[in-house]
Length: 226
Ligand SMILES: [Zn+2]
Image (tube, rainbow, N blue to C red):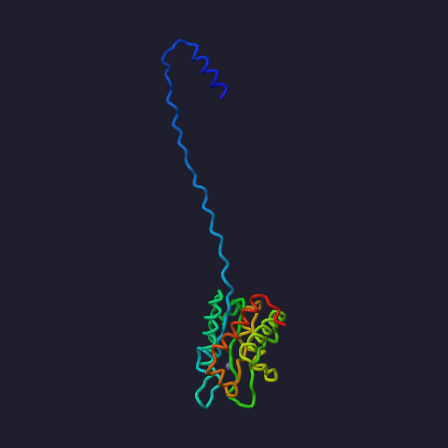
């Protein structure tokens, strides 16, 4: 700026003459586009896996003389619970009893929560539902919290009693609980007895599904569910 001022003064004191001006160099500016920021990956909603007991195979599970089948109850409740959980923003897989996702030897199927849905036999001497986790759980505290949340929500919605006396090794050694990722919380629910609890298992699957969905939801929200 200072040098330009001096030369302007010198030029002004000289006799007027044509000053050949060199053309200003053409400068090319390359406008570098600022790098487009990568979109921040939106975390996927938690994945819930609901196994519809006895679905996808030949074995329908428990059968009643009137034709009510365990597999029809579990499949319908799983489907209804899936819709409820999806409406609350979760992703939901419905699995068959021996689903290919469970048969990987590396146990890599890792939903945020896994719940297998079954129902008890068509008898009239027992009533109620039960929830259990794997006896050999790698994360017993989380699995117990899941059991508590599903138990509390299901009892509240269905008003069915908890039938603890009939928790068997079929539940605590249930195959699918040993086929998911050991770090995925998992449990199995028996929705009720197809005999004594027939009215709610056959006619009020909306309630059963709300109980299941509420229990999963409460667990995923981090509730202690005492
Ligand atoms: Zn079953």
